[in-house]
Every structure is written in C-alpha cells, then in structure tokens.
Length: 181
Image 1 (cartoon, rainbow, N blue to C red):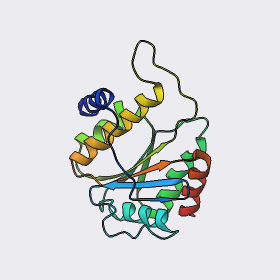
Image 2: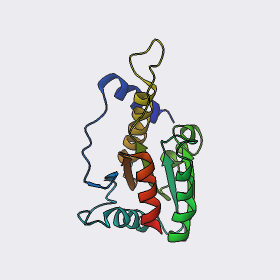
Image 3: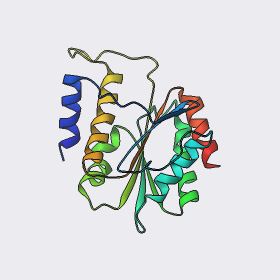
C-alpha cells in the first residue's frame, strides 16, 4: 500500500497537521481516533492508564494490539518493555515495531488487512535533528510526517488508535511503564 507514503509526501509539502492533544498528563500528550477515547475522563492523574485501558478494550476478541514506536531504538530501548507489559495486562497478542521501519512490513497489514487490531502510536520530541541533504526538511521532520501519514491512513479506516506524544522521552517512557504496572 502506498497510502501512508502518499500521506507523508502531502504532509511534507503542506506541513504537519494541527492535532491538539485531548490532554497532557506529565510528559505525555494524548490523542485518539476511531472512537478509542470517546467517554474517557482524561482529566485525572490516571488519564494515561485510562487511555491505555480504553485502547485495550478496543482490541477485537480475536485481535491484536500493535505498538508503533517512532522512537530511537537504542536511546529509547526501554520502550520495548511496553510490549510485554501490554500483553500481560490485556491477555492479547501484542506486536511492537520501531517506526518507520515497520511501515514496509506489518504496517501494510495494519491498514490493508482485516479489522483485527487496535493501535498505539508513540512519538516524541526530537532532540538533535539533522537536515536531509538536498531536501527542504530534516530527518526529524520526515519521521514526524511518516507517523502523521500512518495515523491518517489508520484514522481514515476508523481503526482504534491511541497516539501518545512524549514531551520528554525518558520521563514519558517511565510514565507509560508505571501506568501499566
């Protein structure tokens, strides 16, 4: 499927979409689509856990949860612990992919396969960014556009998606793991 790639190119041309968070709790901004956060009270300090619970409740009976981490797989390696914590909490199959790498494999199934999944996308503030040679954007901007393009493709299909943006990577990952403990 080329939809995410087309979405990414359109975003690179026009800029990132304005997606204000529904709530900011600690180092995590929460956003959702596909009805995943409808009726969830995100105003409490437990809002992250409640958002995760709502996402887990959206996993179909014989379905899976896909964690799509647009993070640094070395510097943010502890995010990999989310897979086992979410599997233990949900009793469901949980996949984990480092974005944008998964887009050419399981990412195609997320959008083109049967509606058997719910999706957790994690993005974060970019620390050090570098320009892409001969292009009018940076590597961080490219990654943000890829994540936004993938979110749009999932949202266009009504797939349940919880998007968590970490304003502080280490604190946000720690906060997520604590919400699942």
